[in-house]
Length: 487
Image 1 (spheres, rainbow, N blue to C red):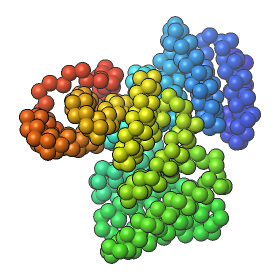
Image 2: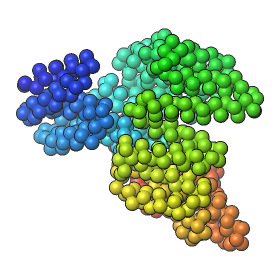
Image 3: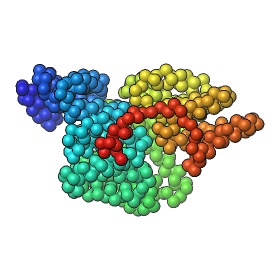
């Protein structure tokens, strides 16, 4: 078993931060494992370690190819080591999380969780960490109640293993608290975030989790009307950055602007000024990263997206499109043209051009989406629904009302596997189309859409038929419930 010495050397190099040496040793470790047909766990460990190192330098394609190669070998092995297979599935899911292919990440992490539980690992910390990753994918897919259940299960497992006061729980508590804040459950979020703050110790710039907890807790207090408490926490976070101003000027600008915004929240004019400050903060960070930290491409892309959103809120559509194009170029460079994130960036370009009534440009971007959408494995039903709604809006603005209505009814079939936000967008499009029919005196058509709208509202009746739903891994939920992964 010569692979053992390479495994030890690779892990030691990684622990010492020698990533280049660690990658070389993990490659050798993997090659040596291939000589031992029964070393399934070692195979999986070597492939996972190498994939993680490749992911750190954004070599996702190579990492994915290595993992799939090992996965095929492990699944064909007799007897099959389900725990080793689970390790590879988790590694693939983690890569897709990093690449923002959240639907694909959820599929692989779900499969991994089922196998991990079936391999007598139900009470292990590894399963708890796996459930936490799966929860993050569900959050990004908009499945917040499912994510909450997974996070609570992960936290409970960790508390059973390590005890309720272990510092390792801080991140899990923060994730759950942040999720509850998103769900407007501020009292519950406060309790969890205070626990996380207590476990993480004295906040420090070296511990970014502690600063994230302070900022999130401050936002919870702001939403609860406890402005003074929120300002105190943000000032505490700000004081941590001030000794190293040159290293994080954008963080200081962001915190200062938010503090000023909270201080002036009672005055409408000051609130407007706060919104102006918010855009200025985003622009400062955008320019700073563009000049000094171009390697932070993911954050750079997020900033372009946030600036474009802010500009559109102020009806500055031409300026917004400039940042949308930067976001789209960065997305294609980072993830590739046939990636779900590229489809979403193109969708943003369509929406921006529709706001400007540039139907020709919007149609061109829509055609690109249709050309690549079926080639993207990670495209969710909600992505398709959004595309159909864009097609409906384009048809409506082009006065092709028949096509617009057809796209609306096609969208209805995807609602069962989409979020409430998607339903809201669909209802808005129905309302716009209904209004046009009424103005044109086409009362039968207007009545038909009104009935559809009422059926989609919270207290409306159910839609009689929903045929052809795009079912996502229809057996996966059933299997996960049988194994106790989700309720």
